[in-house]
Length: 401
Image (cartoon, rainbow, N blue to C red; front, side, top):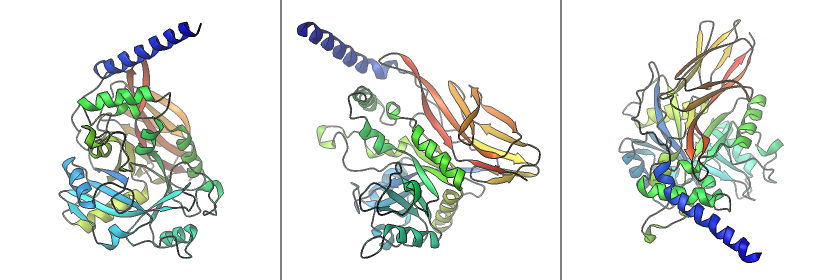
């Protein structure tokens, strides 16, 4: 009986191995050019939450700037842990055409809760009698954006309900490095192996690792129900990768991580040639929620827009509007092949659209509206169609008149 079970187990493992090897060749993939921005608005792609050699990152500040510029990134926000060295050393500048904006990640003593502080001033850091709460209060006083990083857990350092912190004005909805680590499991190793094989042929695409974080999205909706909050994506870029460069290939590379998931800001004012102007414009858009998350490793998403019009007022993501009888939601996608668009109100899906490039929807009740877009792919080893998150918008808030 034992020998028979071992044969079956061996056959299953062999099948998984063969299917994983074939996986990159049989996956349905779309190759497209970056679309043109929509009329009247400007979009800029960036990466938030990058760590450098000043904390637990693996590269110098200037080298990350060089890589980001080679990938045509508009901005990178670095958030080294509990240190302001990048800010005090005045490293904020353009590296090529990429804005490098230093910020700080404040970590609670038990490490279960972290906060990104993004702003113009050098923040107060915890330590020497300074608590996390007092550091966050100081950041809020100075007008910084404070974003809860990771799934909220109660921390003894943070006097707050639901572990968010009373000063928080946003949360991280997706972190690439965390998903990468979660793949090292019995259920995830096949996806990880397939992703590595795919990576050897196309380092820009690690779509096997994209996961929809339902728990984070639920917490985000709850937070918005209590106060206006913004959602961003991060990639930590730590030195602890699965494969080192010395083994012949670095998996994943800094380049592939920087291209995987982006926070794309939307603004009515274009970038200029002045660093301070563009930095302030970027931070203002982040604080206002004028942005959306895009998994660009699946497909470039620039050209997406989501607006609402009520009366004579039109607002974009992050804006608030008064309801005059009805409001019209407008959604446009840069591509609509094998795509599902979901419109949510107060965290619940109210409408779905299949393969639709442009949506116009009238709503008659106040609420918090946002959009999620999924791309459908057929993946091995079971040849099942799966929806991968592609675009997650920030909300538009429609209130009673």
